[in-house]
Image 1 (spheres, rainbow, N blue to C red):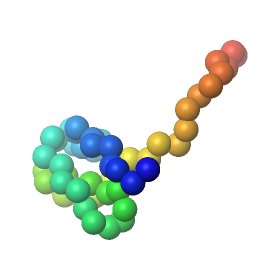
Image 2 (spheres, rainbow, N blue to C red):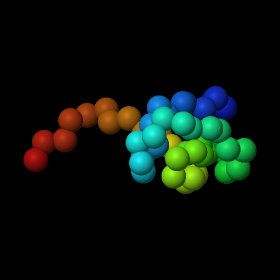
Image 3 (cartoon, rainbow, N blue to C red):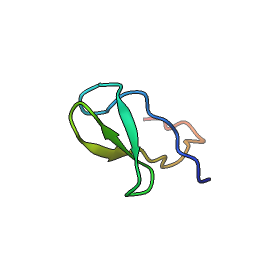
Image 4 (cartoon, rainbow, N blue to C red):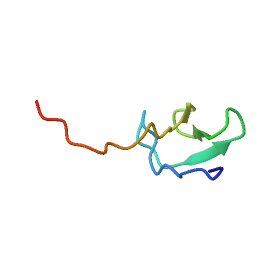
Length: 51
């Protein structure tokens, strides 16, 4: 899958003004706090864990 999922909020400051960054792949830049971040899906949980 080569398409990016679009984040709606910066995970650091909560601002909504996000722009795609060319590098690293899949990165986003927040205009408010100037941080560059990437969101990565690790996987899906298929079974419940009982404690």
